[in-house]
Length: 121
Image (tube, rainbow, N blue to C red):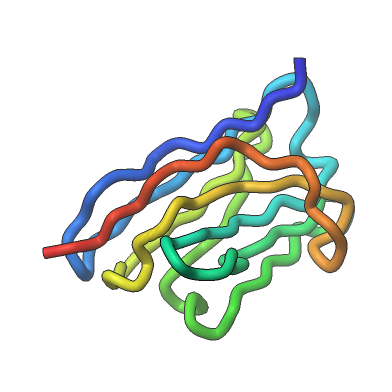
């Protein structure tokens, strides 16, 4: 059974940190590009980060607004991709999803269920 599960969300104060996990079952995650996306109420879905497959050298990508605050990485042994989020802002509040595809530049068509991140004082 192929499955993709996000975890690690929660409530934090502005300036705080969270580490989100995207754990795969039933397939080998390092063969694929993995992206993180978020969607807040009343907002369009927004790309947060992406990492290419191990065969494509694990290149990472970030929008300018996340660069320096967010870091994507792989733990191959655990078949998991992480998103480390630092210096969190209220504007980061959203449901965060991971998605899998062949290329970061293509369509990442297989999605998890999402995990809620809330940043407030």
